[in-house]
Length: 126
Image (cartoon, rainbow, N blue to C red; front, side, top):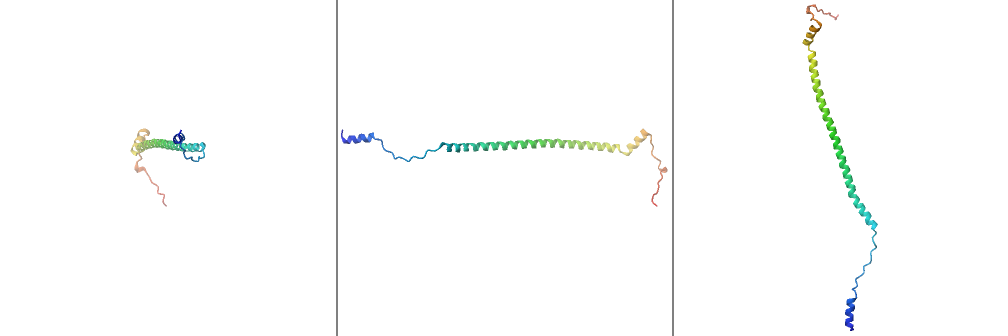
């Protein structure tokens, strides 16, 4: 073997040296796991908070709807009572009419109106 072939074979056979980097300290997996868990819990918490708020809005709207239905029912009753009161007031005024009362007194009780000439007045002033 010649020296030139030996250098050629040695050059081919020997791997090229790569510069060595200083090894970094190995990362602990617990830190990355806690970060990932904390990051993954935040959106879930926001979703839960949003769902609770939406449920609250729905319940408030249902309560307002129930109150509106009760108010409509009360308003309807009030208008019916006013109509009934007006009807009763008409009946009362018709029953208290003097002509009707006089006719009823004549027919049922046999009463007659007093003669105005027989009516006397007393003067109470000194």
